[in-house]
Amino acid sequence: MQIPHAISVDSIRSTLATQILGRRIELFEQLPSTNLEATTLGESGVEHGTVVIADRQTAGRGRLGRTWFSPGVTNVYCSLVLRASLPSNRLSDWLSWLPLITALAAAEAIESVTSASISLKWPNDLLLSDRKVGGILCENVQASPSGPFQIVGIGINVNTKPEDFPEELRASATSLWNQTHAVVDRNRLIAQLLLELEHCVEELTEHGPQQLALAYQRRCSTLGRKVQASLADGSELTGCAESISQDGSLLVSTVPGSGPNRTVELRAADIIHLRS
Ligand code: BTN
Image (cartoon, rainbow, N blue to C red; front, side, top):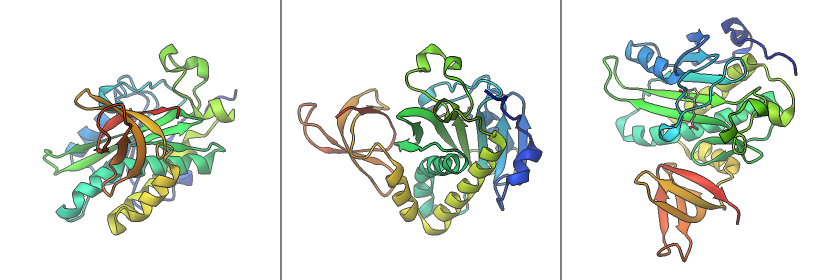
């Protein structure tokens, strides 16, 4: 295997074609978590579109309080500070679609830079051959001296070799290298990721989620599947994932035998794709 390229701001800028995202890029060799650093920067008033990247995280954060495996030199760990500017009656839909469109943008970026085919597990897991290759953690910071802002955190397993994953992740996680056997230049991938995300955020802000929802649904391998959902209150349900609602929730029709037959709207849940 070739040695992965080091990340550098100059290399990212050499292919970066964005107008706004990445006007300021902060690159660190190591951080506890890029989301945490981006939050600190957001509170200090940094501009919309500021990007924080680390080569390694010592306390990478995943959804639902999990940790995110974040070894050095091989992967992408990146967080953006966004300051939504739209009327309050559109903010709630904007916030609920943000994680989904970020996953969509990351999938598009990976596919334009590699030969991998990415599908999405609702709400925002990036899957490659049914195994997780990336994840998104969005956080909404309301109470800040600089005004409210959003953190969009993106982690992609890029050049990690299968044997370098911890034992407990080997069956469920993968990397781009693991499937394509080609070393990916993370600088190029980050530049493309920022471009795709800029397009998606602009579309969501200017025109709402309609077109993005269609693109998301085409990529979402959860739809039509039998799923098991773990809900925030600790309960579980099994059913068929039918569709995505207007606010990005997942509509699941529960299977007779696992309780009364009904359609449940999930706003946040951990989903497992079951074999039909
Ligand atoms: C998930 O659980 O699927 C979400 C994982 C998000 C990980 C990324 S890595 C960059 C950013 N910083 C963090 O601490 N987490 C996110």
